[in-house]
Length: 388
Image 1 (cartoon, helix red, strand yellow):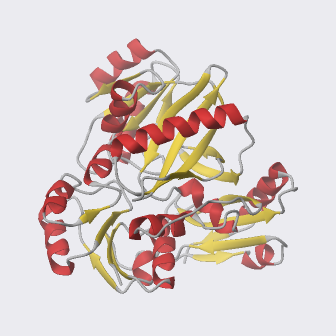
Image 2 (cartoon, one colour):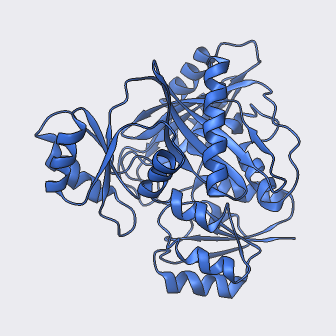
């Protein structure tokens, strides 16, 4: 059986580990803190700073994995090129991991090299250069650290007085040692989607039914599948997703995000791994959830098709305060609701707005997606994260 080195062991890594253990694979879970969600289930676990290239090298040398699977952004990804030269398989590939862990690389690839439609953008490396970038882009505009996740460090500039605060917040939320930010023109979109895209060793690309989502503070609050949209718009998004994933090379699942506006489809971002909005697939909306699809693509197992089995939605359970030993109130209210499930991630600590779990709701294919989503949102509000 394969030996998988999982770099990042949060809730997405936990579900990937569950999928791997179900078919007998060996998982080494690596994170920056003890008892991370995936580490609770993996065969082995390690705690290192993954921005320390020497520490990363030592872990690879110690375990000699068949597959190196990154789950977070804050990794010394340039080391991946050397690992590939040594004969290791990086998922999706060293190129993909390097480009997508940094918003500058992926945006320039999409816009300049591949010609995909994106929001107008600039880069800034200081508060002063941010002011210049905002003047060129115009307000409102969005500021994001080049390396961050779950919306950390992201803010919207609506007036001159927001610029200094946006710069300070971007530096607080940045992951890794990259201080640069991207400044994006605000796209007046009608809705946004995640298009989970699966690339396989055979060269065949598959698409999951589109997932709609709503964000706050740059982080997803609810997601639903399928997202209602016109077929020609979906086909355009699929074409763009295939173009960018082919350009990045490699196999696995990709979370490709798009804005859908009156004037067309805009490429937004891309993650080379299971996507947080894709947790809706845990509601068994598809024949395989996104973690199972990622695993099969990693291992080179053929995936003949992806089918929509029922509609579903997810809504996040957020913490409101710091705790070293959080517990949960209200789970019985969720458990008593039909066509409902939930996941508690098992994170050992909480902080304001930290994602601690997710509510999952579903209905048959004739059901109402708005009602299923509102139900998930309502039930998520019944769960309280208690500080102990």
